[in-house]
Length: 351
Ligand SMILES: [Zn+2]
Ligand SMILES: [Zn+2]
Ligand SMILES: [Zn+2]
Image (cartoon, rainbow, N blue to C red):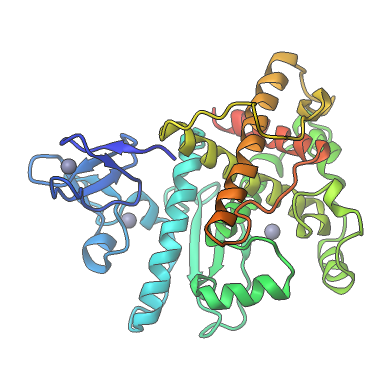
């Protein structure tokens, strides 16, 4: 995530609605990829969800006939706003959703809404399982459904413990579901032997495996005993699609994390931190794809920067009495999957 500058020179962050130095109201303009002041003459207006519900800081052109920003226009279903609790949970959901959209747009991936483009567009259903017990989180034909209750910290904590997850966040949910959406949009229509699709199978396994049986087996028996050597999370071991979704979510986490460090002037060097050095093959693409040793090396250097940062994040977290911020291990097999995610990101970013 980049940081931004106010016209007064103060540093602004993505979620800011006001500059604390000069008092200007500010909002994020997705077209210009910057935070800009909202005032007469600046040519923008605040999204109506920001004006009415104080839960969005994105802007749109003041000449636009639309009332909602591009991110809010993707909402197909929003919670019942007669409940104050729902309103505050919804605001947390929107923060996570906007951060996902920001990263995808930065990668260059076009994101039409489902209204603009019913075939490949994206929409969100933000629904509470208290009022709609039948819903499950997931992706279907361009619609990502998230459970509003997950925005309740104690609810999410209980799920996290019951499912034995080391990390469970709203942003993680959005990133995970975006992987299913992108898979369907960019890979599902390719022929079985298309190199891109073959590459997927080579890294993630046979996607024709019976999905519901695989998930049931995962919940009944748990992950295989040595899952850490091959998967980024235990859930990733349940089915190739879930492995892809967990890997993609993780890839976006690293993209965002390293971008944030660089934007704030943190230089990550390969010194003084004992780190796992990945072997060269950890940066390689499946052999169905064109090979480039330079691109592989660049990817590995990028990933190693993150792997230097991870123990620092964890130690700082311990210093303030918290659990490790980054409870993950990137093995060579996991790195190879991240490499493929990086390849797809570059490919789809030119779409
Ligand atoms: Zn300012
Ligand atoms: Zn909005
Ligand atoms: Zn999934």
